[in-house]
Image (cartoon, rainbow, N blue to C red; front, side):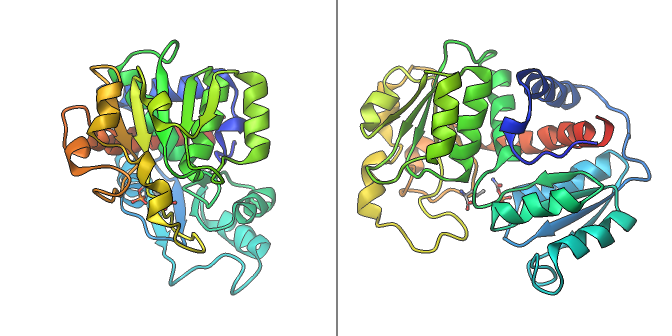
Length: 296
Ligand code: CP
Ligand code: NVA
């Protein structure tokens, strides 16, 4: 059994195997290896893609899914996180958790005798970034010598992107406002492994010759206060940014997107945009993650 909490917990080969398996199962029939497997999914925050793709993926693999939404479950509120884990392990084979504090899922996993999957915390979103990597592999074919550029907020999705870039030696430019920086410890760890992770406050430097442009909302779920738009506006992915990138550049966004905030309507609707393929790949990536957790 293995948890899937952060990408940095994986080896490079494990991450590459997950990408390969996601694409294999996307393109050919697979076994229903989850027959008689029961999955509890705890969602303390809203979700469209993660919730539906997990439920349908579990169903396609022959398993059963049981959702607890934010009204039914807030970790640590009605009983301790440890007691919740000790009860659910008596019924289920796997737990998928979307919660606020990263420390909550870590605490849960420490007690749980069944595997735990991180479906997003305030800190990281590894399921999303695995799907992003699958999308890049599918459409560009390789990670080496490709330039990936991130724009805007330094949030949970970026955290998992930094971890993936360190493991796979990806060239990652992070264009963010001054004072809004990635997690210091993560950056220190990642830069020690991969010198090609670069933080800049110049969005043009990040965009120049990029093979992939990525952004996300300027206000993530659970952010304590809204950040002034004026701070982020220079980091909007718009036609000026697109023009600086490679001709065949891909635009990616985990969704939900806020049009004309972090990305213009023109860019998200352009032929460079792969956001719905990226959303589809959540399904394929998560099936591979469940296989990894249940069989390791
Ligand atoms: N990208 C993503 O995780 O979407 P949801 O919040 O809708 O699950
Ligand atoms: N950073 C966003 C991602 C949503 C899928 C959030 O946490 O709200």
